[in-house]
Length: 351
Ligand SMILES: Cc1cc2nc3c(=O)[nH]c(=O)nc-3n(C[C@H](O)[C@H](O)[C@H](O)COP(=O)(O)OP(=O)(O)OC[C@H]3O[C@@H](n4cnc5c(N)ncnc54)[C@H](O)[C@@H]3O)c2cc1C
Ligand code: FES
Image (cartoon, rainbow, N blue to C red; front, side):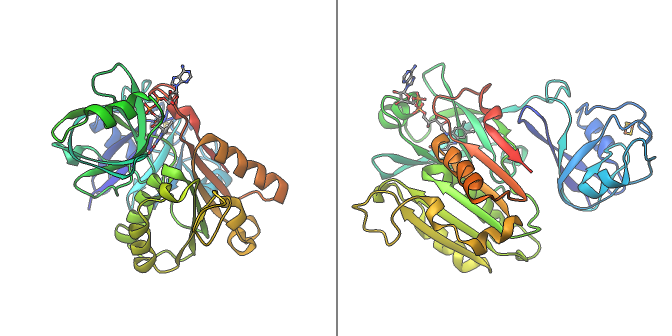
């Protein structure tokens, strides 16, 4: 059986390689002409040391100078020695440029553009070589905005196995992408997408998970939920809870899909809140008001947060005031006006 290895580079680019049975990650990468850093290729120098975010493997033979027992226990590994026993996600030291493995550009065709309200678009795209566009749920692509020189980032809201790609896009007054969507976009248009990018992706569920979404920050979390609902061998062994907050009632999107996941995923629950005091929602206020002590589990929780920069900052402050340090805190800021080059640095992972 062959396995898919996602190699996630420091600059946010992810490349996928296929490992055949008993093949090391190094050999699989070499076949795909991806130069991850190597020296001895013998488990002696530690040059290739990487971090395994998810999946199972046989670590192979190596000496303590290359990888200590403590490091191996934490999830560090040696790609020159390790043989995958499942699909893997590895954080590789170095940039994709160094590995001569820059992000790929795909030509996508608009197959549908619909609006939730006047401020949120759902854009569906088809890519001819869909099989080559592999991504991890939570990641994003950089879009070349048609008819402009601008590039904007959007997170997949569809799951990695879906045929078509779906994105949820919040408009901004006179924004480049906004103006394209509102004034020029047509079914049949082509859009160049580059990626996949980002370190905000779903890891193995080893403890309770708390997902926090603000506005269209729900998009990458929907992609993760799709993976949990349809792409995992087993239902999550720990509770997964989502708090989804928006400013106004009209900003709430994809509630039917969320309900579908609540029905389909055992142990998955949702709370929705709206900041506007005039809202008809049951829960009024901000996401942090609807996090419970049980969900924080004394800090033994993996938190995935996606939303505008102000929300990310507010949640970080919330940890400080509550004296909580989540076991893992992964976040993506939907910074406005980002370019392809600036975007990767905006994603964070704090262990
Ligand atoms: C990693 C990442 C993932 C993202 N994923 C999503 C997603 O899934 N969904 C989503 O909705 N958004 C997402 N975003 C945000 C998205 O990339 C865009 O920033 C957003 O859609 C606005 O794009 P725009 O071209 O319409 O507006 P822009 O052209 O970027 O303009 C935004 C606003 O800034 C104003 N502005 C522009 N330039 C200036 C200037 N020089 N001075 C003052 N004001 C200015 C404009 O008038 C406008 O109101 C993501 C961002 C990042 C970094
Ligand atoms: S290259 Fe030396 S340990 Fe892997």
